[in-house]
Length: 169
Image 1 (cartoon, rainbow, N blue to C red):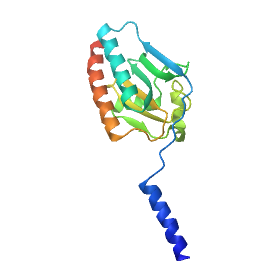
Image 2 (image 1 turned 60 degrees about the vertical axis):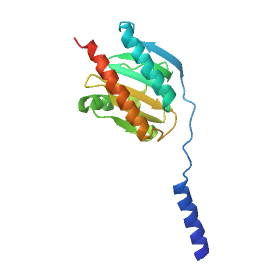
Image 3 (image 1 turned 180 degrees about the vertical axis):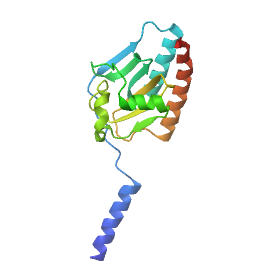
Image 4 (image 1 turned 30 degrees about the vertical axis):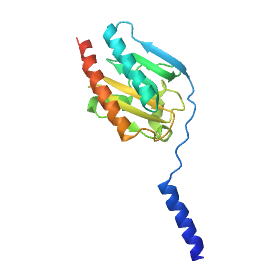
C-alpha cells in the first residue's frame, strides 16, 4: 500500500516538474492584412513592422490595433468579422492603461467581446496604447506568453504609442 502511494506521489511530482505543454490549435479564419489607408507611410511601415515582429517572434497569431475608436491595423489569422467598438475589457485596459493577459480565453464569460478574433483563440493579451488605443494579440495556445514575451510586447506598444500620438488633433 505504502509503495503504491509513493509511486503515485512520484508520478504527480514528475508531472509538476515536466508538465505536458498545452496543445496548439489551428485557428479558424484566414490570413489577413489591413492598414488604414489614411495613415502616413511612416506609420504604416511601423505598424507592419510591429505586427510582423509579434507574429514571428512570439506565439501571437492574430494582431489588431484599435486606436481612436477604429481598427487601424489587423494582421494574421482573423475571421471575416471586424472590430466595430471597444468592449468592456478593452475599454477598461485603455482607461487604466494596464495590460490584461487572459491565459485561457475559453474560461472567461466576457470572451464574446472578442468576436473579431478567431472563435477558438486560446489566449489573449490586451496591451494599452495610452488611453486612446490597445494592441490586441491572440494566440493559438493557452498559457503561451512568457514573461519575456510580455516585456517585448510592452516595449513595442510603448514605441507604437509614441508614434501614434502623431495622430492626435
